[in-house]
Image 1 (tube, rainbow, N blue to C red):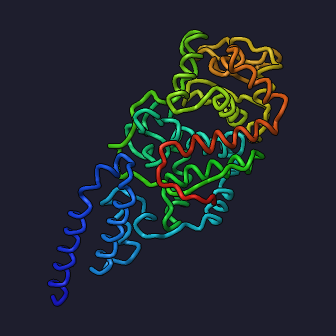
Image 2 (tube, rainbow, N blue to C red):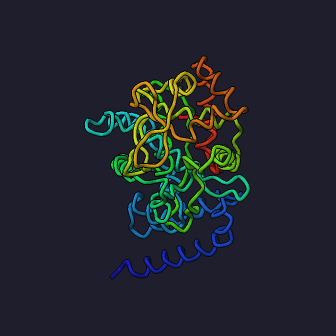
Image 3 (cartoon, rainbow, N blue to C red):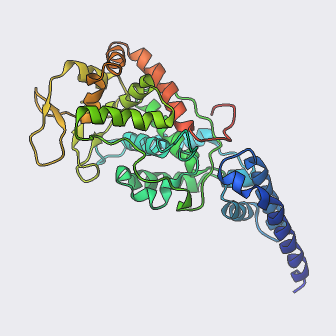
Length: 349
């Protein structure tokens, strides 16, 4: 019909857009300095789509898919961050799920999204939200995290400009704060990768046990040092084990670390120091239980923190000083969730 010549003109323009941006594709995929140029090209493509009769949302979505960026980067749409926070708060309490809250689950999702970072190769980290795809979605350490992603799906779908990558991190921060933990700065700007091509290899997350105490201690350092963390940050981050519990059908381990698994506190460190831990007699993998009742558990990697001469002083400090723990955790968690993120906004939301 009458619109066909004009559509052909816009398609020609679109091809030109792709040609102009092709020289910076590789740099963008590496997260290099040309990423903003690539985003600009995608926004131009969005405008071409719009002139061809697409709505702004549809055009932005199409451009985002073609360029492997977030809709926000293509549409210049800023999510309503106050609404996102409120939406996350609204789903935290869930009767029938573990101890009545999905907060610990959301923290684990963000932790495992971020903890894949490799400071040497500059790969992994929360940018890209690659856990949505196999093979990363099926890595053993991520068992059960589909439950977290499913619960966030409605929030992402109903929020223009919100990337999965930003949502996973902000949801965990809201969870920490709502369960009594410290305020954690959040800077948006993460984008979503379009496929599992960008997934990191299995084995980048810490294991609970490497067979011997020395091997487990070495493993912990190897994993966290690869991210660029130091001993103090390692211990502070492990304090998140004040929350949640292990599931036999996921990790193989079973039970909570503390008696208040939906309250963020320094209780994990106090229990490590003050409780006598003995090997649990059962058919599952080796874990420890409290000698005075067996209602709590610790993993070999947990006890490594009090068995290592350089880790232990931090455990002792945090067991005595919750305020110091909260402050150090906030800084370490913000660092963890920003690893590998090159285009974050300056201000916090």
